[in-house]
Amino acid sequence: MDEDFRSLADRVRAESGGVPRCERLLATDDPEELAVVLVEREHALWEREIAAFRLGCAGDRRAFETLVLLLNHRDPERCVSAAYALARLGDPRTPRAAAALATNRLRTAYALHPVRLLTELRAPESVPALITALERLLAPDGPHWRVALACVEGLGRLGEARARAVLEAARDHPRLGPAAEEALSALA
Image: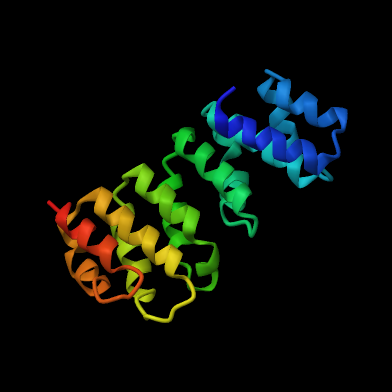
């Protein structure tokens, strides 16, 4: 069991109150049993999260919609699990969905994990979405500086020259300056 699955399992065991259903979903090797949880009504969020995570990590695209919803959840731990599974899913819709979440002005507070996922995916949508998100977050007193920092770091890892102007602007930001300098040195 890898560390990400162990973390998910520990969290949902606590959330579920240790019911046998939780252990069953964590242990089953039957993708159909997991897929049913995603479409049947009245399943708890922790049940859907287990099913989506396990299916996503196995490359089963039936998990896509649930994982995208979890990527945009207010609970950061759910976002982390969803991003991990989406990165392994291999669904071509993932970069577009992550870009939409990362650039949604109404959901900026929840954009950290979509930004990190875009960096990991290295998809054609990644750089334009990170630039768009960062441009909006350059106000020195903005409350979402952690999202802006993830954009700067992601653009540095992606190393695309298209990011030069926004990274130069980020150098003047009190919390982003050092990371922007580092990112600029990594540009192609």
